[in-house]
Amino acid sequence: MHGGLGNTGIVKNQAAPAGSEASPALEAAIQQLVELVRELRNEVPPASAQSIDDCLPDITTAPGTQPQQRHRALMAVAGIAATVGAVGQPVVEAVNSVLGLLGG
Image (cartoon, rainbow, N blue to C red; front, top):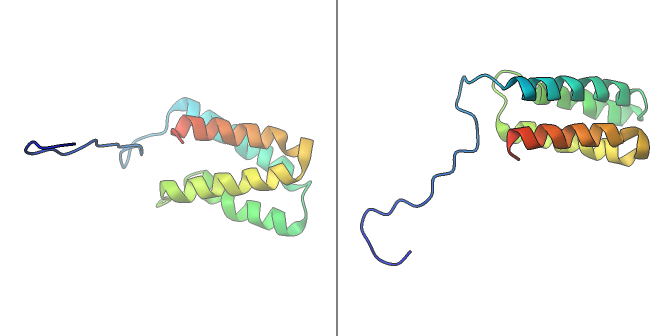
């Protein structure tokens, strides 16, 4: 921007306001993802299963979870799912659905 007074720029609020409830569509997508992840957990090595266990609280929005933590957890689960091929494809699709609903 060139010149002018009081220019504030663009304000982008991409996170939901604190204390706001998740949309029913987001809650349903997360529930579906959790079910798929629990099935996937039985198909991966123990170290990957432990990583999934570590990610689930952040995905299901444990109190105090920051949006960045949730995003990292979703990406970690998608990465694990991608390594097991066709078995993990439904999990990757569910993660993409949740990310789309979160605006990410």
